[in-house]
Length: 432
Image 1 (cartoon, rainbow, N blue to C red):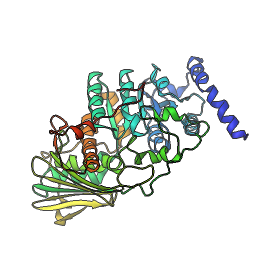
Image 2: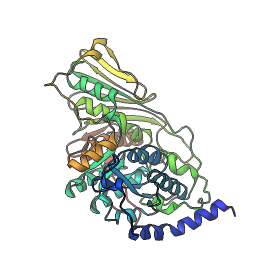
Image 3: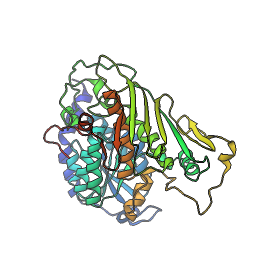
Image 4: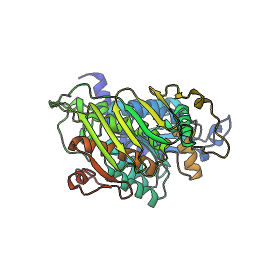
């Protein structure tokens, strides 16, 4: 038995006791806590718990918040011991102490009255259940995108409104110059009347996935990882990054990258609070193996205005075509292109449409809104409308037929089979 394994097991046994004990320990107030030395006073900092600290949870979300002077990380949580130890150590190194609490159960984070807000960076099937539990516990929430189902998103929107919580879907697009600029130009009529929007998203999965059961790694709480999803035997191809390719946990690249570029399409089209009325999709799927999300796809949506949204697998791209020209880019955050090129030099006047953004990014915007109690730039309903486009596209591909959609009622028209796919049952005891 290796020394590393022994240390990890010992650490896991000590986590809860150490975390609880740390809360009750006496402490000395230093000058930095009083706001001296250029730091924000402790009373002005927003205390945060981080639920899900894998690669993106650490390298994008945790590290970004640690760089904000008015944010204070006080707890981390993950079902994987290796992730948990790494995140805890990063926080403690940042603050030069050993105060960061570490938990394997998110409910312990939510039970702490000294935590103002949480950052949720779990797989998709956990996004809504944890967000709702956090809102009910009095926490503001930033959560990775997307939802798992249309129904879950509806419940989340209702919950955040009922409990008056600040909520941010965690994507950077509305803070990215290229997408903000593109959408402002479109919204202000620089390409005339929009008739077609083209979105390309990455393909995948590249392999069928291995469904062969494997031993659960030591220090990994696989049952909690599954949570509300149906029980299935552990295999490494099911977890961490690969969860994206399994419909029990996600919706493939259509929901993953779609949560970025479909939002851009909605933003520029001025349809953030509605959606298309028709969808028809065709996808290519692996015939055998674990993965059951589309690896290639072409989906065409139609809005009530007649605007067409065409989504294909390829290179991440966004393009608006109108009666007087087009604007777009090919590649993530790539330079803008337009025809005529003069569109790119156009100045947005003071009385024209100026879209809500925050150059500092989604985490900075979230902290500002926690303080002001204003809506974030990617709030619950706007995210719900965006993710719904992806969900109904997946449903159309799986059923292999055109579907009529009512964006006001958020339901299919006279199609019971498709309607049943708007929600999923959840494994006991989890629910929303």
